[in-house]
Length: 194
Image (tube, rainbow, N blue to C red; front, top):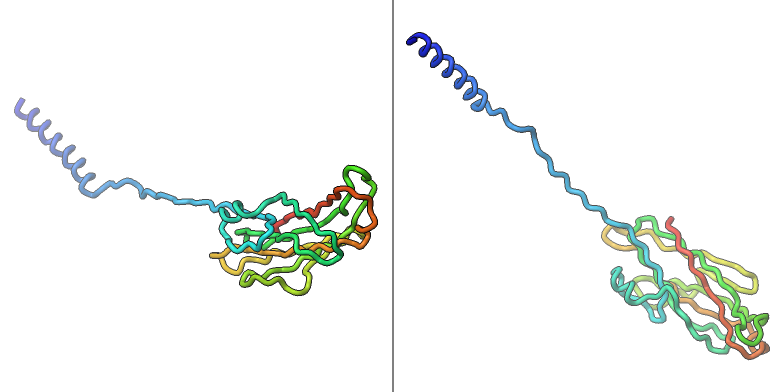
């Protein structure tokens, strides 16, 4: 019996030694990794304002621009400042805005009367408040033309691509001979990333 106890005791010590040796050599768990990911969503804003827009954060843009703006034109054949087209994006390659227009059409008394106009788009540099003296693009509703305006590429990854165009409209002289009515026409801006 003493031999059996001694044998069991020796076996228990050997098993304890094996486990102790395994823990002492440090059977450690595999390496753990925490992967961090953040997605920065792309955004593009395009809007119209009646005043020159200086601020360039998305919040300011949404607060100070409209996607639907109505402007009353003066009855003159002089070119009139009517609005600003403003674009803000965080995409690197810029964008293109295609512009088209429809003639002003009578709405109540004579829907077959039209007033044509020319719309000119003058680029306003981001560093200033004065539009370039030469039009960047022009549409003429008498020839159903359209034009494209560029939104430049971003100059750095810490800044947005932003563009402002002053829109000037000149009515055709035919406005003086049409039937009295309220005439409306639309200039449409279609935005596409480059």
